[in-house]
Length: 140
Ligand code: C5P
Image 1 (cartoon, rainbow, N blue to C red):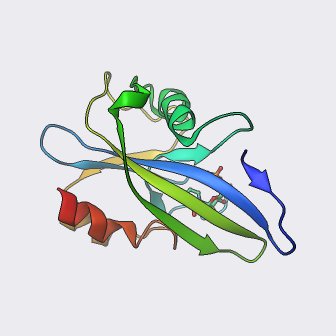
Image 2: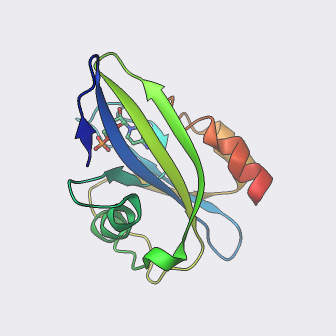
């Protein structure tokens, strides 16, 4: 289920993941030109497709967007974010992943940056992502 339509705006389910490396840095991805919110930095992830769980979605998206391999058992749920945009409500579960294989590559032309938790505040983020920074600072 990625979209259901309650009486008002549609609900969009997007799963996001904080990839954490051995130096406790977090990977941020910059939304490319031509996409909504272009230029803003976000936690990697994407829309949950029909029939997928958020965890399955992240395993797929991390592979497609970054060339990273991981497993569902390596994803730990951290919190939920939500934001009401003009035309949809976004619900976004955030996971943390510390065990993965491969080197993150920008498979879709996006900018990538490994940043220390407190440095994340220097990167402009979409409204749903920004409140998640404090959770990661506390966790890491
Ligand atoms: O990444 P994608 O364009 O598929 O995401 C759909 C919508 O979800 C975006 O247009 C954006 O409004 C929202 N989004 C967000 N934060 C993210 C990912 C997506 O606010 N980390």
